[in-house]
Structure formats: C-alpha cells, structure tokens
Length: 120
Image (tube, rainbow, N blue to C red):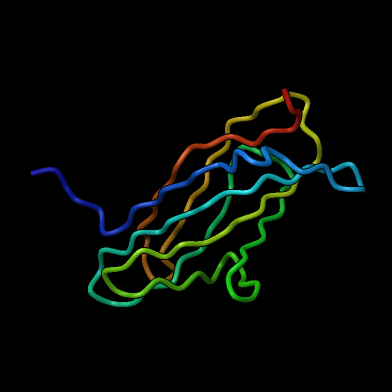
C-alpha cells in the first residue's frame, strides 16, 4: 500500500496581476495556498520558499500571520493568501518551491510553482 501523507500542499500562482513591481524595484507575486491537514488534531505549519534568494513571505489572513505559524484545524484545509517579494530576477520566470513543515514533527510537503519578474 502506498503511504498516504497526512499533509498536502496546493499552490496557485495569481494570474491577475501576474506580478506587481514595487517602488524599490523589487517584484511581488501572489499565491493562493491550501494546506490540507489530514490529522485528527489541529496542527501548525511553517511555510518556506526555496529556489530564490532574499525573498520575503507575507501571509495575509484576517490579519497578517507569521509564515512560520500557520494554523490548520483537524481534518481541514487552511487557505492562505501569500505574497512573495524578491529582487527582480535575471530570468523572467523562475521555478521555485514552497514547502510546509509541521512544527511538531518532521512531516513536510512541497509544491513547485513559478516566480515571475517580467510581464509578457
């Protein structure tokens, strides 16, 4: 039997707008992130990003919540709006990886997506 992970991650990159250029020259991309908690207990997750330098993650809920402390109820899906800001990249589209980790175990899940620096 394949092992079913108690954790899944889905990431959808915003299409409209694809990116926002900020006044300091950096670029912000938005994502809709869903963390699927299949445990029968509430869990807290830490969200990180790989494949891009000096990026900052902002998670927007009813108020801003720290990306290392995302709560998801038991047997539920946590939906989060995530804004990733980084310097303008040399490549127009860069593959990146979002990773979530349970804060009380070694269980992680990851999902590839893109960071867009330049419009078409």
